[in-house]
Image (cartoon, rainbow, N blue to C red; front, top):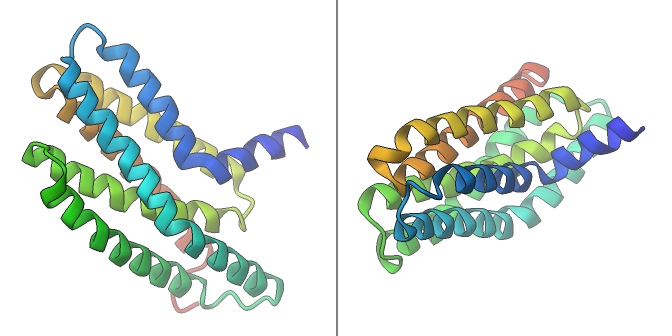
Length: 197
């Protein structure tokens, strides 16, 4: 039971846990290497991406989770893949409507940080959707493993790109880690509920 509760916590708060652990790990790696302005840009982009994506995706995820639970209970899972794609499309459209003006004009960031910040915003929004849908599978090991692998890969990328790219390297590492987690979870969902099945 305790293991189940821990895995459920990772599923429910996975993106936040990954962000917090990654931010703490990256902060400890860079104290003597990155300049404070680059670190501040990285922190700002990461916190904004996760906060905005949660606010936008949160209500949608609640509805999708209920629809998915009803579909599984009724043993009508042929539309689950379509549900995932439609949910991702809606969340990404809403995030783009916010992210393009925010990162394109309002925030004073270098161009690479704007692009990576936008990708981070989109991937974080997608992660909220797929992580919530994964809770229906009870595949706790897959979710926990995906987040652990994403943290490891993202931190490694950040470590090797930190000196030449400063804060942009940290942002790149976080984006790479999250993209990896997103694709692992989405692939697991599509393996369980194939499109058109």
